[in-house]
Amino acid sequence: MRTRLLEMLVQVVRTGSFTAAAQLTHATQSTVSKAVQQLEQELGVVLLERQVTPLRPTAAGEIVLAHAHSVLDDLQRMQNELDQLQGLQRGVLRLGLPPIGSANLFAPLFVTYRKRFPNIEIHLEEHGSRHLEQLLLAGEIELAATLLPVSEVLQTQFVFQSRLMAVVALDHPLAHRSEIALAELADTPFIFFEAGFALNAQLQHACRLQGFEPQEATHSGQIDFVVALVAAGYGVAFLPEVMVSNRQQAQIRFVPLVPAEGTVWQLTLAWPRNRQLSPAAQQWLQLAQEQLA
Image 1 (cartoon, one colour):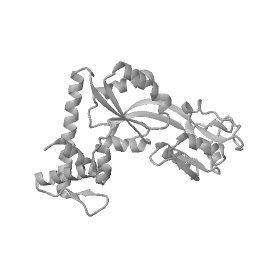
Image 2: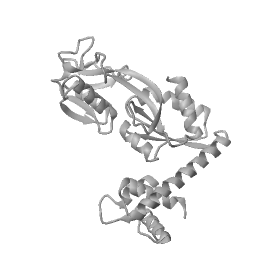
Image 3: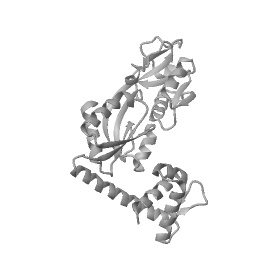
């Protein structure tokens, strides 16, 4: 039984469709469908309930899936040990980074890492923190930058922290304050980021601690667009201080939030506790410790 067939089955179950699994495995939909059928023929059981959307495993499929994860994890551990034996002469780092803060913090690390380990390929996924955590647990990536707090099933290495800044239009009544308490923005609509960004939940929790529910004006995954909406007077947004130095505009101001629970942006590198990191990932952690912590 080829491991490629097991990989395709895992992706079909994870995504719930042959089409999405094909995209992730860089194959055609028919190839993925035939791979699952081949597994079913070899094992003599039906693995998927195909009459429902999303697709889900049968009872037999659940058993095969559990063993598939075990087999694939063992193969990854074997590859990790071989990479270590070869002194990082080759290998792959499957890394996840969020759009917020990555350019400022991690771009220099890419340069240094490439100089030290030119034969390591970096496969990068860019999503909000919570989505990256899901990819970690699914085994799609090995290491991810995410915001604290994280699930107990993840191990972490602290990276960086920065106070949050309110992004307000120049004509906002609080624009010329030296600090703004979050509660003072209760009447201003909030411009959130897309679902999956941990900063959304952090801000909502901080608002509740200060006695109000934030009004949502809209949400976007594009930071420049969020800032442009603020400049147009559409609402208030929030960014860590580390990101604001290169985003100064005449129509907006960045004002620090008064220190309180939930007003500090804390970034960490995370990975599943039950998985051994590859030498490539271990070196990324070491480099982050050297340059960021």
